[in-house]
Length: 402
Image 1 (cartoon, one colour):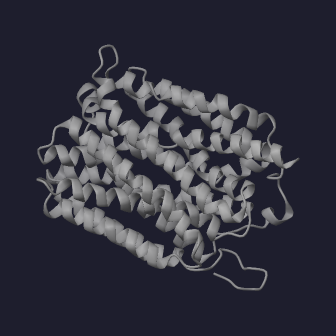
Image 2 (tube, helix red, strand yellow):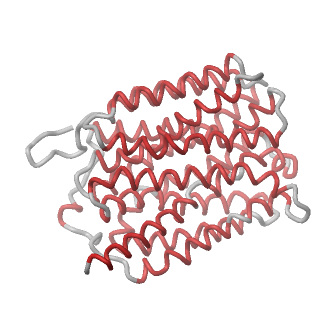
Image 3 (cartoon, helix red, strand yellow):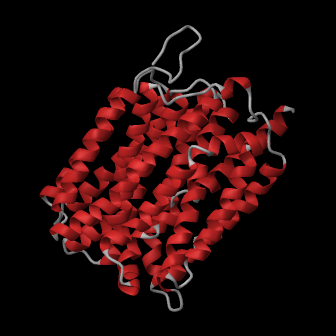
């Protein structure tokens, strides 16, 4: 392949990755702003409403371990194409006027998003030069975050449009997944087969690696922060006196202000052998932001706390993604690490939104859930310091281990 054709292929691949990334959060973040309307319309409790997010996370956990195997059998490109089709189907099913369909559609969306979560970091490690892994991880993360923020902000206005309601507002995001399917179709038709089984891949076993577990638990605890925001931040702010529309835009602000941190964190991470200092700064932003909401959750300081939370959550998430590449030697190892981390990590994260809703239902206050969030951030910091070491999950050829 000549240089011009290779450049064209990488441009089309990058566009496809951006569109896939755009679908890996929006279908879930669009739920948080209308969760009050869903509860009122369906009669479900806060704890059950929290399961709308948790269902998706448990689906992430269920599909993540088998995704590398599916990719080796059918090719990454084909599996990602199927994921975009399943997201579209899940979004349509979720808008059918039955509670069972709401949860079934959410589960399908979660399975498809979980597949994309695992494969895109491995695809980046396989198809982009080492020096561009941080940059492409940043682009991928920003696309997810940007569309997650847009979905959070515009869902309420769409729901208020005559003829839409919350079901129509959620169904709109099927247009985005359908567009990704169409754009990705040529990649599937001409997909590479270098990700077929190989002897080296067959021997990859990360479950006994301490570093792999640290990456996994960091992934899980930082994910609780993100999905806790998605599920309950508008409700927390509304409880403090903010109207739902403004609270929805506060969630959107979290996503939007996270964009520069989401983009820059993996680039900075890729330039350093160890990411411990960067990780400490990032988690410190989250601790200050949530500490501020706990101590002064209303008044003129709220936007500052929201900005700090946005910066911290954006950087912590993209750090988790780039760890899959930085802590592995090959695309196969990156895929296996991504699958392990997102399986166990999202299983841990899946408990978060429902537990926070349950504690709120029991206490009648958001104070205790906010204290829980500060504890979760501290745990993410502790495991993240281990994950940020200059090591790989399997021994280097020189014999260096994790």
